[in-house]
Image 1 (cartoon, rainbow, N blue to C red):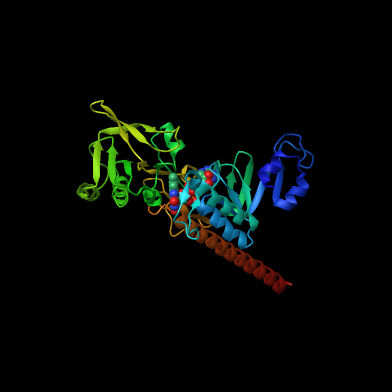
Image 2: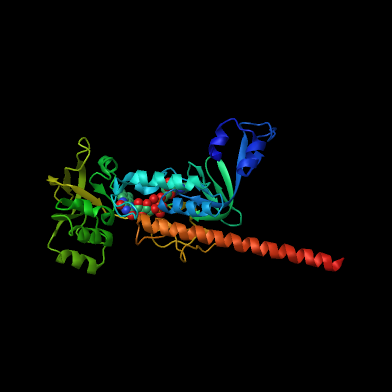
Length: 367
Ligand SMILES: Cc1cc2nc3c(=O)[nH]c(=O)nc-3n(C[C@H](O)[C@H](O)[C@H](O)COP(=O)(O)OP(=O)(O)OC[C@H]3O[C@@H](n4cnc5c(N)ncnc54)[C@H](O)[C@@H]3O)c2cc1C
């Protein structure tokens, strides 16, 4: 049973502290830790704690668990990460016939669990990286950990239309590299005015018969070279000063068309569509680390490989990778982060042993 569930059920503090490596402290006045059931606050002591349960976090967990480090994964509220909101995944190695995103993540979860990973289904609400062990707090648990692996991902920014979430993976997408292949000979729209939107539109012309780029202004944030390249591509049409007001058809369960409004003229038109790619950027989930770790101008964590500037704190996956943003690259980085954490712990243990031996030798010389 994961520790967070233990907190809710009628557990025995002494037994649980042995089994799950918990320190227990009483949170209420006049409560004895041994008798108090409700007001006991748990401190979970861990060598490796992983924030996030997407491809990066679960791969890190598999490696750390197989190194006998009994990692704890704080899954976050989107257990399984971004792949749980898509359907077919055809580019993750090992699945020649493709696999559904949620199924892939469930398999990764099971694989991590099989080797002894513990899971908490909650968000980390605060982290203190100022000293080791690092302290992570969720709504009900406090975790003290020697190493922290940050795999909190980056969420695709969406337009805020109700249909977007409902049709995500059913014609709506936030990733042309991932889903472009499914739109062979189809009509697609790309929303955005940055480099990513230009790149996605050009990539989609390999498959779709018609690609229309929709942008709310007639100026672009994208670099001139990218705009010029897209302009030179005869397969791309442009709808400028326009926004999408509606994506149809939620009832049918797939994309059939869009309602577009010109914000200068007010003209509204309905257009048939098979796919809508939202390319207006990503927001890395890094609020927790502001002021503690280095970030770039878009709030991605800045790392050297998977190492952050704080020893023992590593980052992997979309949270530190604005460039590739793929499940397999996130998994690769998760593997690296777990190995780095393992080597870091081994070095720490060796150094502690050496200090202890030196202390014993000094004591013996005195005698
Ligand atoms: C619609 C869609 C389709 C895609 N299709 C493909 C595809 O076909 N192939 C492919 O390779 N890639 C695809 N991708 C991209 C792929 O999903 C990502 O690159 C990959 O999921 C990144 O993994 P990650 O582990 O870095 O982050 P994520 O998968 O984003 O996972 C982040 C995790 O962090 C957790 N978290 C966030 N904040 C906190 C917090 N405060 N405390 C604890 N946990 C937290 C979340 O709950 C989540 O579990 C797709 C993406 C989208 C959106």
